[in-house]
Image 1 (cartoon, rainbow, N blue to C red):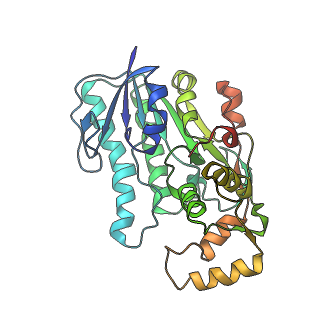
Image 2 (image 1 turned 90 degrees about the horizontal axis):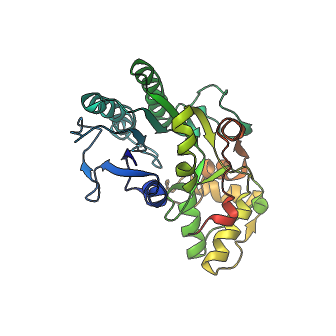
Amino acid sequence: MEELLFTGGTGFLGKNIGPVLDKMYNVTTCGITPHDDIKANLAKDVPDLPHHYDVVLHACGKAHVVPKTEAEKQLFFDINYIGTIHLCNALEKVGTPKALVFISTVAVYGCEFGELITEEHSLDGDTPYAKSKILAEEYLTKWCKMHNVILGILRPSLLAGKGAPGNLGAMVNGVKKGYYLNIAGGRAVKSILMAEDIARIMPALVKKGGVYNVCDTFQPTFGQISESVANQLGKRKPMSIPMWMAKCMAFVGDFLGSKVPINSYKLEKMTKNLTFSNEKARKELGWEPLDVLTNYKI
């Protein structure tokens, strides 16, 4: 069985794909938690790796936070970009792997709305999160070419899985507490991916490499996702409010801070379609994603 180094392997993604990866590889995790096999803060240090690894899955990163200060903005670059450089420095010391898979993000495209966006779209992301991931992609592309390492870059959409953070986690919490509301029928469509699919695509990806969007083929609406969440929690189907009411609430929310359920920024994200094409991954890797509405369990 091949040796796999998994950075960030004890976080949300690792908890969801660990059991699948364990059937494919001897997995060693690297990160800052007490549960990691190798304790290392990639943002600050070059880790001391005990031996060579056949495959590296680099998922360590900072996301799901809107930075308010320059220091908070810099953290994205320290973790997502400098951390990647430190990882590569460590790999050079023990012998480079045959393949490296990097977990990037669809945020690199900088799109707030759009439909079936492909990998050919320009990298226009201008947030610290997006910029730091773009820099990491560029660095890895050069480094892997220099060291003859097969590079796979995955750009996942919203991830679904047990204990999901970010927008999906906020929805689950809102439905659980009874304050989640759909806007104008919840008809906005969003790409989403079962976290487990990251593991399922690995065998083909480490052989071929390439840059791929990964998301479910079926693009569910906010209404469908929230109804699935409500059914699992034994709650009633979330109510829907008209757009004019949502705009009034968002206007008030703009003055109350980022922790309110709705403001103008959140309203825009909840009411505009944003979907990505997975056609390239399906055609080139022979991968078929899991149906999220069927497989997602809170």
